[in-house]
Length: 274
Image 1 (cartoon, one colour):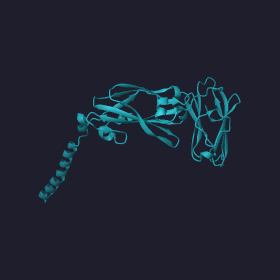
Image 2: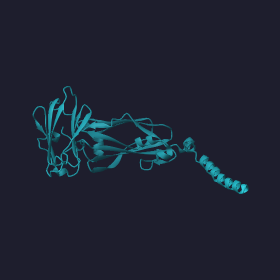
Image 3: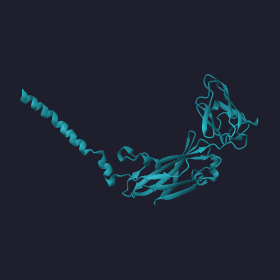
Image 4: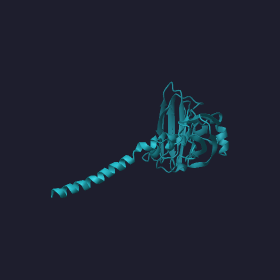
């Protein structure tokens, strides 16, 4: 009986030893230690991720492109524009083959490449940059085929898919500090279906909407403190945009709609009021 028990114990130990050996073969650090398996890592540095809609015509996309190791042959980037539910297909922007490199491309040139003008770039839009990195050994990386779980370098994605947000410009033609009145309407009477107006006061944002319980209208009174240096008012769309409209009364008593239009503005208000 003891011989049988010893035999059973030996049988149990053999697969454990085999698994242990296999685990050693799969040492996760082995790949990372192999220089030939290290991904070509490109970094985008010193770029502004936000540009005001009112400044975009006179601004440029400025950045520095650098690498971690000397295993990058080139970095190519395309650009596209995402505006609401519409996206302009990516077009080639630039190609970098020597690192580090400085980029400075006017947004007017970027708009021209996209077949539009900077007047077509509005608050809430995203300018998306998609990078392609080619290694010196011919390997090609995009955000779609890059796997950080294999290379252990999740930061690589930063150079392969990044955006610049077009932000509404600050209020510049009205008294900022004081009482603002926001009048909102929904023609169907069931709330704003996810849409909202944002008052950003010196970087602190508060969203206002019409809830389903409020139905067809809501009034919000916003007190902007004395000494406020910057106020940005923006609109974020929801569902059933044809039902939404709103106006803003400034502390000066002026009635305003988005883009300075006399109110009421809508249905389907644009994203900026300035």
